[in-house]
Image 1 (tube, one colour):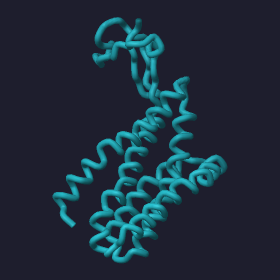
Image 2 (spheres, rainbow, N blue to C red):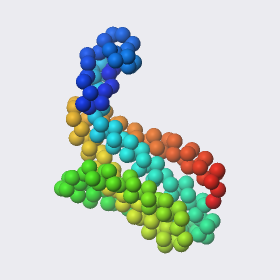
Image 3 (tube, rainbow, N blue to C red):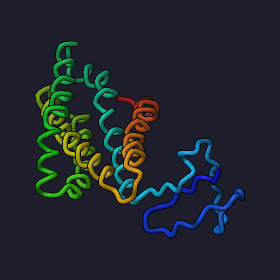
Image 4 (cartoon, rainbow, N blue to C red):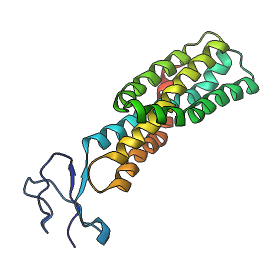
Length: 196
């Protein structure tokens, strides 16, 4: 069984050798399954949208982590927090098909590139909201960025060159799930040290 070779699209993919390192001295990972024995080429587009997915979902964790602080500062009831979370969730879900269609018609790379910055800016503004109305407005506008990014990023991963469509899409989703895994810990440490 040949070892698994992971390369970026555009790199020359050399035949795998049965040693523990390739000709460039980069270690190769022995494949445990026959299906992994072929070369797996990760395109730069997939690596970029997976990283973007990490950034987007990391920012998307912000409101949930900030609700305890904002509830005290803005004197929010549980129902007010629930409505803010509902506005966030409905906006991210309902507008994804629309933005997917827009990306199909007008190109998606620009949308995918701008939306992580858009989300980060509006989530940061939400953290400094001085009223409940301003908070909900910031959350809805930030959520539009999430609705923009997800269909574009998934489509870019799906359309990446090569024959590893499933693996490319899986790497895209891995970026998001990695953010959900480490994000709460990072937010917790930052908020604890930074105070309210």
